[in-house]
Amino acid sequence: MGATLSLSQARRIALAAQGLDKGRPAAPVTSRTVGRTFARIQLVQIDSVNVLARSHFLPFFSRLGNYDRTILQQMAGKHPRRMMEYWAHEASFIRPEQFQDLVVWQNRTWVGASAMDPGLKSGVTRLVLDALAGGKPMTASELTAAIGHVEDRKHVNWGWNWNAVKRVLEHLFEEGVVSSAARTEQFERKYALTRDVLPATAAQAAPDPAAAMDRLIDAAAQAHGIGTVRCFADYFRTPIKAAAVSVQHLEESGRLEAVTVQGWDRKLYRHVDARLPRAATGRALLSPFDSLVFERRRLEELFGFHYRIEIYTPEPKRRFGYYVLPFLLRDRLVARVDLKADRAGGKLLVRACFGEPDAPEDTAVELAAELRLMAEWLGLEDVVVSPAGDLAGSVSAAVQETGEQYPLSGNRGNVLCVSPVD
Image 1 (cartoon, rainbow, N blue to C red):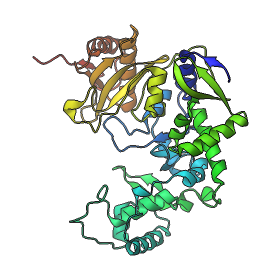
Image 2 (tube, rainbow, N blue to C red; image 1 turned 90 degrees about the horizontal axis):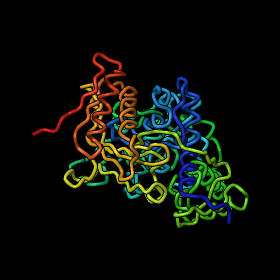
Image 3 (cartoon, rainbow, N blue to C red; image 1 turned 60 degrees about the vertical axis):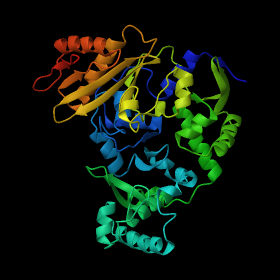
Image 4 (cartoon, rainbow, N blue to C red; image 1 turned 90 degrees about the vertical axis):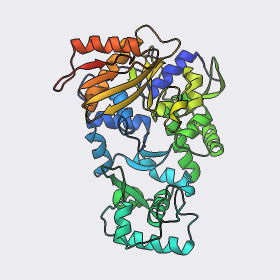
């Protein structure tokens, strides 16, 4: 058995692995800085919810602060691509060099056309591939029109109510035959043949499954710093039994070390490259889809923070709000905030603020500063704090004070604090 660590040390290892253990870079954020961050966390989850910002933009703000979001669009849309879409934890931007390894181990046939009528599936597949062979990326609706596909939609009751073309496209996407070349403003995929999106990778032969799994688990362990077999398997959503075999391989080769963490009663492993900083000094609002909070059991065991996304919970049953972001301060998760970007009104709406029972005294002040930084990054002029939540009053006071000292850029630059309604 390897070293014995305290829970505080384990938290610092986890935060350092995710690039969340220290303050943001002082210099302007460049594409190289964003690229290094992406290489560290390995993937970013994609989600269509846009109540605050698209989910894949937020992890970079959490780690880098005010950065230009067009950098990500360039990384995902220009050759040579530095990120591409595929299934990983969920639909995600992944590192292109991991694409073939993931294709070997992803098995999400339920997503697409596996249950379709074979004749319909075969015919639509042929037409779709012929249409995409021209090299022009197209959305599912554009492809439907291009191949002249018509079907009776009155009695369709499948999944997301996709037509046959969309189902075939998602099946081909899962197989790695087609990829997403870009997204529209409505967040629709523009499909293309994978060989046109990623020529070098598309030409490679399928890798050995065991070697592919070893690489994926090694990457997941690097992104965790410390964790269990289940943690590592969950990162790319790979099978737990195969992941356990890879963990054994990596331990034997010296890439992983079995460790003990006081208060964390599971078999744990630390990556050989994991860093243990003397202190954690970072501060960040974390997306509900941030890679630090992927594995909820790990989050609770490591940080004592119970977290659930309540987007699909009926409003009367929600505890904290619709789109709630955990707030990291130093080495602890100390609060949670329900946020919404009112783009038309130019306001960051803080709809509720809740502190954890052991939140430190400076939580409200630090959270206020983080909210103002987020508003600036999103191009919003005002921060509006509603009275819901036990931390709302002190956050209101803090944003009011900092707003008077450091107005946000824009026509007004105010911080609005909403009083309770009688």
